[in-house]
Length: 233
Image (cartoon, rainbow, N blue to C red; front, side):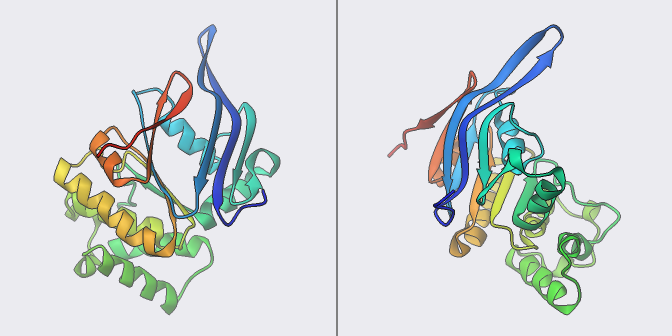
């Protein structure tokens, strides 16, 4: 991939299907997509249309049944499972609808965990975690356990954790699905505030069409295809 500096994700003729009883359901059917460095892309569509499947393919959690997927210059179908795991661990960040914070760890320990996985320990790791927690407005919650936080606070911690190891790409799967509209918008604005200055890429799957107005591009997934939607006034 010659233009890795500009295009961080490239899909070409990507196919993905699942067996359902005696039949096969084609979730993605010959999908092409380029995602640029620093871009904020929103993906929406009906339930079961393939939105989360798209994120799983980009992350290498699932492999395509046809076509090619390049992420940060590497073709996922041609590298080992171990290499895909390391790519996820070191260069991708994840934000989920249900937060996925580790309940037995404090907020601070949750932020240190992804850094430990990539070998970052000690004062520098703690300093980065504390700075991120301050950026999301929760500096005083370092020693708090997740179950003592509101839903919006837990999602802000989850965002800080996703960025703790300084990933190139953040994949967010319905990160505002459990939040009211005001909290949802504030979460997405926070993601933008943290990612755009550093030219990080954000791919966000959502049912909330209003969030598309904050994005650089909005794509709809339906019937196995991706279609770019025109931006409104």
